[in-house]
Every structure is written in structure tokens, then in C-alpha cells.
Amino acid sequence: MNKRRHRLLIGFVIVMIAFSLPLKGSSSMQVRAEVNKGLAHILSVVEIKPNPNLAMEPVPGWTVAQVPTRDRKYSAYLLCVPVKKEDPERCAHRVYFDDYAAPAKSYEIRGEPELEEVTRTIAEVKWLNNLALSYERWPNPHFGHRYVIDVRTRKQVAAYDLFG
Image 1 (cartoon, helix red, strand yellow):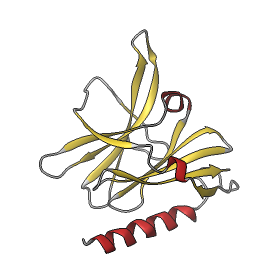
Image 2 (cartoon, rainbow, N blue to C red):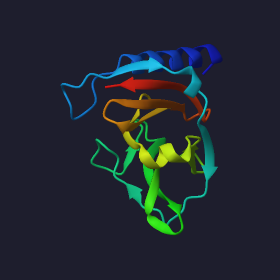
Image 3 (tube, one colour):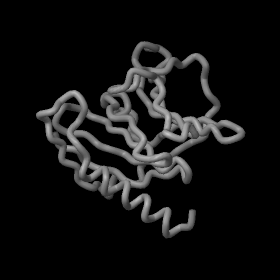
Image 4 (cartoon, rainbow, N blue to C red):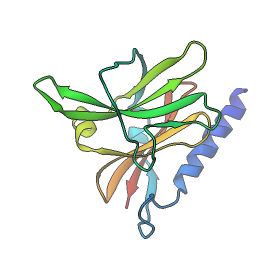
């Protein structure tokens, strides 16, 4: 895919997010999304070696622990990573995805301040297309952030403030 087509695809994804439907589970709640350029490049994607001791968390809004792309080349999931060794029950939910191209690789999305990762719940983990992963963090029912990651380039492509 050439660069121009790739940029058009990312632009289309950003427009789709800006005009997204209300959150699942609340048909009366309208969510307004505004671009936040200050958060647009805070996340990074780091290749990791999977830790078999960490269990997958249920993905909010789904009946499965992993959310695959339509073409099944990528799969996203949540892990509960212990914050401190003294308190293994307290954890930070983090978003991961696997790339099933040969050889298969696993990636962790990092970059949010630790306090946000512990206190903010993750919602709406979804694939906007076969290359764009989106998820939200909500500290309360009225304010949150939506992040969009291009899994092929492993870069954050957008961030939004959400008002519910």
C-alpha cells in the first residue's frame, strides 16, 4: 500500500471515530469526542515476550478474552499487570495485541502515566479495520480518552477527549 493510500486510510479511521455511536450498554448516553493533540503521541508499542503467569482479562463489551481482526492477522486483549510485588491483587490493565504473521509476535501498548493505568478502566477495545486498534480509558462516566494505534507501523495515530 503506498503512502498516500495509507494516509487516506488513517484519515478515514479518524473521521469514523469522531462520529462514533454512543457507548455500548447505554443507548441514552451520547459521547462527544474532541481531538486532543497533546495526547496524540504519548503511547508507544513495545514488542514483549509473553508472560504465562498473567491471565487475560475479559474484554468489556465482548464475550471473549481476545478480539481478533476480521482477517485474523491480529488479536487484541487485556492483561492485569501487578503494580507492586507487595500487593499482587492491585493491577494495571494494559492493552496488548498479537501479530500472527510468521513468526508471531506480541506487543504491549505503553506510555500512559502509571496512575492513569491503575485508576482508569478500559472500554471499547475494538478494531476499526484490520490495521487500526482503538480503546478507551474512563476515570468516571463523564470523561475519558480514546486512543488509536496503527498496528502495522506500531505507532499511535490519534487521541480524543471523550465527554459523556
